[in-house]
View (spheres, rainbow, N blue to C red):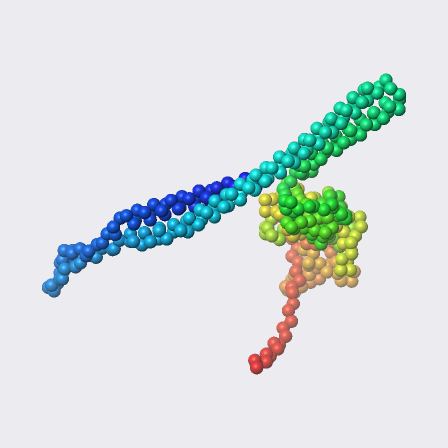
Length: 391
């Protein structure tokens, strides 16, 4: 009904605009046809003196001709189109009013049917209760039968009231509607199948949700997609697959730094919520899904964006560290290259501690402030392949 009323208001506004334009064009046409077209003759202007001895001829100032006839032709020609537009607008208003009447009638009919069902059920309860009261002095079997009728009538009343309550669709939780997979007048099928959920959360696994789909505005997809999708934009969860070697180090409550490809420069803090106890093979590698809860939201974040998570599995304070890319293994020992006295690289062994993706802890073997040499990429030059001339 609300949509039909908005459509009617829009049609009324369009009709008013068309009628105003028709009246304005008619007035302009009528005014122009009754007023003679003015003409303008050349007006002589005084001669302009020049500093030379050449005689100057008088100049004529030509005034522009009046455009009244052009305006008249345009206004009179637009009257026919304006009348057609007014007729079309009146037709649209009539159609919109018919739609409003139909919507109001359906709304009133549904409400009346609901009230009638509740009233009939209430009357059945009263009738059954009266029968039970009148049979209280009768045989026990009559009393039990009347009590059963009361319970049956009460069940019918509860069902009718439940049907009336279910006529209003209510969200189970607060959130933002991100998708509506259906239109007014369509039938929504019952949900079927199951949804794989993320570990420690009720959110569906991203790859499963993407594979099954959520339907379109034309109706619900086969398999029982959701009719309305709600998103909690106040908090976001990230489901990340980790390889089995990395998943063994990840535990709940560990801190995480999340970066989003679509928002450069944004690093959102998060916490590991849970890690799946079972893995899922993918391309020959077993991955374990971990659910990460972002502790601070950002207005630029959107559901479904691609993100990367860096989990801090361990940390040490006030220790020596060096880039992990500078560390290599020789003879079962961890070594690095340091500049010698003559500037040449010298191999120096050391005792490593905790090893991370970016840094490695130094327990012994290297003093603080020691310079180390980072490996450099080597590119082998190869002769260019001669190109064949075009044919």
